[in-house]
Amino acid sequence: MISPSLIEKIRQRDLPAMAELDAMGISPSPNETAKQFADRLEGLNLNFAKMEDALHSVGEYTVEGVAVKASARIPEEIFAEPLERTSRLFGFRCEWVPGFFFPASPLSFFGGYAFYFFPEFFAMFLARSEFRKRQKWLFIGRDELVSHEMCHIARAALESHAYEELFAYQTATTAFRRFTGGIFREQLDSFLFLGATFLLLFWQMTRAFAFPLLPAWPGWAILVIDVAFLMVRHCRTYQRFTTARDKLTRLYGDEATARAVLFHASDDEIPLLAKTKDLPGLLDRWAENQLRWQIVRHRFPWSPQACPQ
Image 1: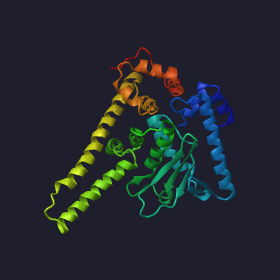
Image 2: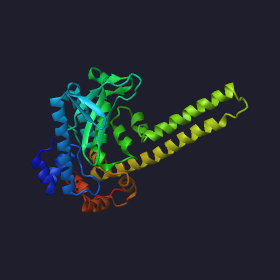
Image 3: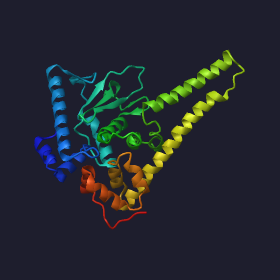
Image 4: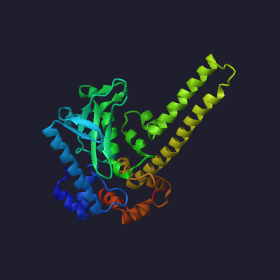
């Protein structure tokens, strides 16, 4: 829980206090004022208090249809390595987020997920019970899963879609997953891909058993078009992401700092970072108008004389 004294400092626009929260993975949303930010933090405390009261009194808490048990709380030592990973990659540690194991269906392929809602603020992490004693389930690593979902929680205020999975997959242990992880931005993308795949299967079975004169190309065409769309969109997004990161790296002289700064950027801001020819000027303009970028400038000050091209 966030201390009342820290929240009061937030209400007074105390930048060191805001930077302390930012390092915990809690930042203002775009155009959010200090008062609104403080009110949201008080809401987070209230929601956590309700959860803890229920866990202590009845041993279970239910929110938005999701039930967690006090006996299934994830121990702190499981979060240790993921916290180090997010700190190293993006400069934050979400130590305030509670985690719980849940008994997933054997047919479910979800290793876990971050459960949060916004702007009414609440967040918790859920991992399938197999991870209680195992580092890996199927092809999913526990540490990577936890750090991945922490990224979603830390960027919740941005309500991002285009770059969200791309950021989260930077916690992956292989270059292949770091590149390809953001192809599916949301569930609709996965459903469309699966739909095109099953349509191809249905089309081929229809040709084999009912209408052999049907041409094969329509079934393949739909799948190819879907895959091509996903890949072209992803490559464009990835190029903007890496271009913005590289420009920030030249500005700061350090890729770790550049990643941490880029982590604060919204879907609309990342393309602007990628194409600007005056990066310090752009960041200064944002800091003049947005509390979020004032906090970033306080934590990661940039040099007005630097002008990476």
